[in-house]
Image 1 (cartoon, one colour):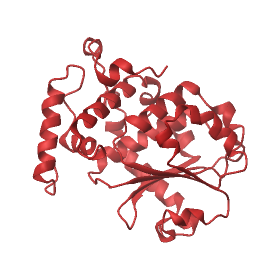
Image 2 (cartoon, rainbow, N blue to C red):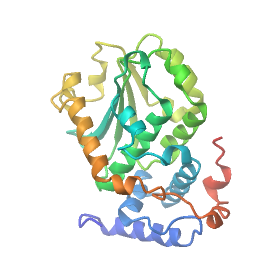
Image 3 (cartoon, rainbow, N blue to C red):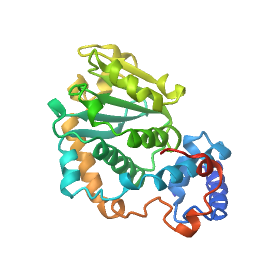
Length: 281
């Protein structure tokens, strides 16, 4: 663990470690850095952290289609990497900004399930690589190339799993979601997705039409990529950094046991907390 970890944080990690060791369904290979991330994301409420850990592994156990066959060097993952720009960095006010941008006019090559795979792949890479604990996480989604054709590309089962994971399992402190370059018909697409979202999440979402400056009310202009008038690197450069990170961690990421319950004997004992109530199919 980092030398900067406080004594109180160390106590939280040890408490979670003792709890994990008593759970037959949870892997004992979760490192201290990751346990601390769960504690931090739940503002050091240990009961909430335990529930989040349970949900994290529950969702991943039900997401075999999104966590397997995701080698970044494979043709199908290369296909989605060519049309999605994404990455994360820390803003000047120490918030984590996650960026996603689709570059596929007409959505001829877009694949919703592969996009979800890429989300898991990139966030897993971030958690493996970084021990920075941000006070807030912000998502920026650029939908400049979105069209109503997106609705024909959607996979309802995947959307449900993804929403469950993003809302209740991923160890971050989500504060805002910004949809930029939003077309007039975005309400139709949002209307299909909204039933999968909790009210607390929908209240975090802000839509910004093309050429709008409303985004600057929430994120300093200079903290944005140069594509949006900021001083940070371009989306293309940020994406290249993300791809390099994924490739560097490729061996870890293609391990299909990464942060998953795979022991069928233990899987049968998943009957606590989120595991018992999780119904995402």
